[in-house]
Amino acid sequence: MKILLLLLLLVVSANATEQEQDILIYKGRRYWTHKMPSLEKCFPKIKWPQFALMSTANYDGYRASWGIFDNKLYLIGIVAQIGDRGKYNINEEIEPSIKVPLLAKEWSGSLNLTPNSDYYEVLKRSPLTIKYTKKIKLEFSNGIITNATPVHEIETR
Image (cartoon, rainbow, N blue to C red):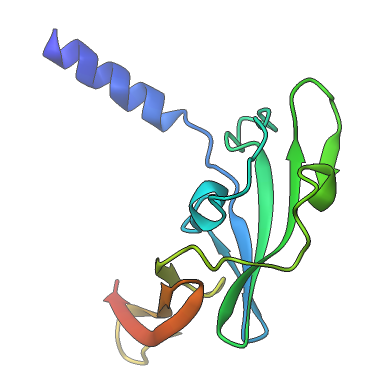
């Protein structure tokens, strides 16, 4: 029975659709990330409507765009489908209290950002390929960056 359950879980996870990512603009660069905090965590005082499934790639029911300006995290736009309306709604159409850009002053936590492209280098006289990734770890307190640490990863293939 355990083996059957394990096989079922493997099949389900193999067929799962990758979820859409939110976009974050930081220092003039775009980052696509699954790591953004939920709207409820960033803005707990806003009564968010029940979002409808946008697609199998978006179970959250919304697409959020974020930006960091003057070291502060802002929601700069949101698109969502609500209930059975069958149309997409933006910003104030979703909730009248949303006036973008909206400072995420209730959220504290960290984000790990990876640029959209990694740097690959093939060493001469070597069968190895080196993948160099420069990640950035951002730590926030009440929506304000308290620490930004570059993290360098080198992977040899």
